[in-house]
Figure 1 (spheres, protein in one colour):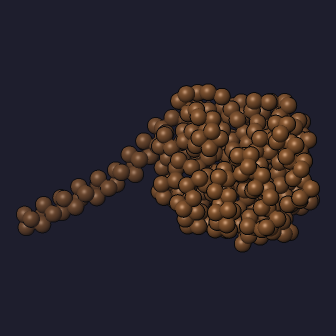
Figure 2 (tube, protein in one colour):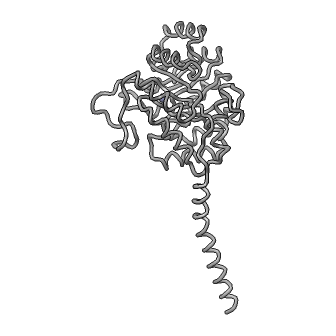
Length: 320
Ligand SMILES: [Zn+2]
């Protein structure tokens, strides 16, 4: 009798202590301060890589969904709103690409220290390579990509892309590639052409390539982890998935990457195209992740990109 009473007491105590944990966790999360340090945005565009026909469904997934699609299409307004958001969220640098190279130049001239200018590559074109070489030697471009040939159904291991990777490796350029399962609603886009395992030949043949993968290959988590384990030079950004997919789905994916021990190679990006208000949404999605420590946030928002870009500065150093 006495033992069963003791056992019952123990059980009640245990259950009560279990119940307290979620409460304590919530309070702890509310106590976490908002991130105010510097940010590097590794994924930004001067516009969309394609026209949006009238009636195109909203960009968010799964579609149809509500609350998106208010595009800022006037180029001047888009630049102004983007710079205002960068100011508001303390974004000191952004890896910027556009299909229209003159737009990239306009943005870079407006804020020369803010942007790492880069061409958006939708299609491999050998004639483009000479022009590109000139742009790199003049200093107009400092990065390569987004390489977005997957949007046209062309996977990263297509032979037509080899000269681009050769050039990027030779010039030691940071390279962003779209190799994942989601993309814009374009007629030739194929999720199957975005499996991160398709990067294997590229990385073997270009061991010095400074490559980072958009959205950490979402939703190919296992494949991405395998690639990042095998190729320690491979980095990834967390960009569009901060705002186009359900929040919990993003957190599940990010937590998978963090648990796999990859927190030192994940970099913040907004994937601003014609939705500058998504810059803030992207920052807040990461800042509010309940499982990230302050140090992990500093790494994602700034330190990992500083290492990848060879800036050799940390958020604690507070440099440009
Ligand atoms: Zn993009």
